[in-house]
Amino acid sequence: MTYIIENANILKEDKLRKTSLLIKNDEISLMQDEMKRFQFTRMDAEPFIMAPGFVVLDTAIPLGKPFPELKAYYIREFILKGCTAFLSAVSVKHEYSMKSDLKCFKASLLSSPIDYIIGVKIPVRLLTPSFIRKCKKERVPVVFVEIGDIQELESVPWGWLRESMFPYNCPLAPIISGRNEKEKSRMITVWKKLMQEQKIPSMPNELKEHEPLPRTILSKAGIYPIKGNIQQGGEVSYNLYEKPAGGLTVEESQLFHYHRDKLAVTVLRGKVIRAGQEVSFRSGSGEYVKINTPAYFKIAD
Image (tube, helix red, strand yellow):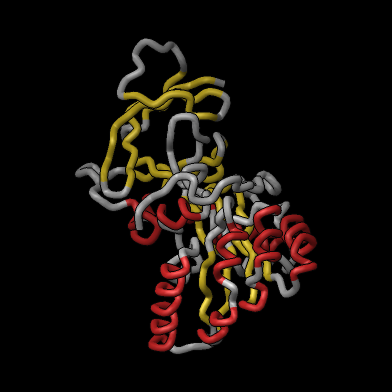
């Protein structure tokens, strides 16, 4: 089906751009200011603010719970918040089990109603060139590193690790465990300095759970511009927020926390998954998003 979304007020960061979108086969075929010459069905988006669907981090999805509880979790934590994809991570304790761990984890997400990206979560001792090569082979977009003591990082062969990352270059993301905020802050400072000195692709800080991932982070992991973006040639995934009569001046990052009550419609790959408080839960309609090249599209921190 081909149709036009006209007068779309697309919010990107803190700027609104009015444009029209030609939708063909669930893809944004064309974006331009006006489309008067086309004779397709039209949807007027003037009363709304349009923004990309959120991509959140959630490494604690209750996959072992009965399906009704898991379904309620997906609806509450993702769909009703305007999320169209999530990043999660499988815990890997041994290098030899990584491939099977990933396979099992991927299978456990088959009932997901939204798209998903899978990273791995490992102890520092698994930060070896051979493990990183396996991550590269399996197209793992993010490696979460659990750090209990900053001295653990001293034994890592960083030079060899950097060489083994090339050319896929999946970033490392720190998880600081069992520390107070002051100690965490000190460890993060050491982490940043070490990553810069060793020229290791990395996330500078811990990523926040249950929060939309910023575009800079999505870019480093290769998720953006595939997800979290409205672009010509891209998929038809977006949120529509009611626009008050006086207009809505807001930053994109504020929508998730402060304007959830204005969220009217969520669309994933051309299908409405939420309209008002009505949710269309399609078990298994979420797709695994394979990341071919992290940081292909670079955005400055």
